[in-house]
Length: 328
Image 1 (cartoon, rainbow, N blue to C red):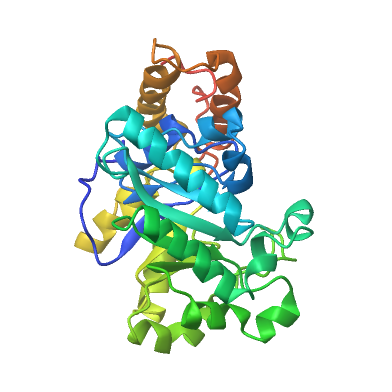
Image 2: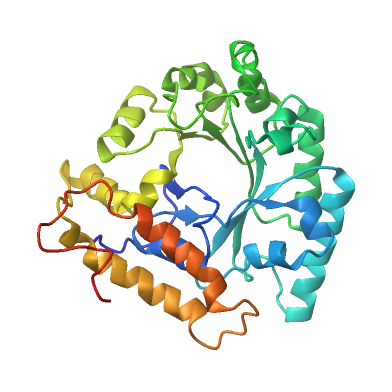
């Protein structure tokens, strides 16, 4: 099983990306158990939160024992202000003295969503060029919660033209955020299109000036993380998406590799059974017990099903063993 890695401040961070349909509390707990420095709740629309949409509020429920990042899709400033006021009121009612005590380790603004219904409203990667507007959102969050980091996650632009114009570099240079997570694809590219890691070279000067740059896109192996770090030593970390579902242990495997130059690889499905059992343990904690959750456990089976469809796809099938049929 992947070894549990103690949390702590590190100069090179390993982050588990927010994944729609996966990143509920059990999954985030598993990510951090397996060595991620931080995991994030699913992207949630700020305007929906500001309208008190209960399904949106459920998406950002956090266990204070497993601090998580909130990835939020910003729209207009008034919606951001309303959400922050509502969240502050929740803290007061809960008798919590800080949002960190509530389990929020970071606020992250999503400027990278390429979905048509998002960019048609000028949101997601369509907001990247509005640096001043983005900075106002950052400033509002800091006004309400001054001690919590605010980061930006974005693509290289809406399309190849914006990538060639280095829209992403301008956002890094002019953006007022604590870190910049750069997904090395533009908005017209699919996940099957290769990420362009060469763009990180353009951010060297920004990093030297103190900007924290975190790489995202096609980070799918321990060797890949090591290559990124060797080619671009100024990077502050990586964010891992789909591969964290297939191989949650990629985080602890890289830490092992960084320490010793080698790591324990999983080659068979049966190697991953302890990881599956740990996930089921977390899942039971949140959805099968009386936790006060107003959502039926059946509604959350979609998360478990999504996870199991992709978990372990990087290893060979055992002739006499199946993760799908293995009992917990």
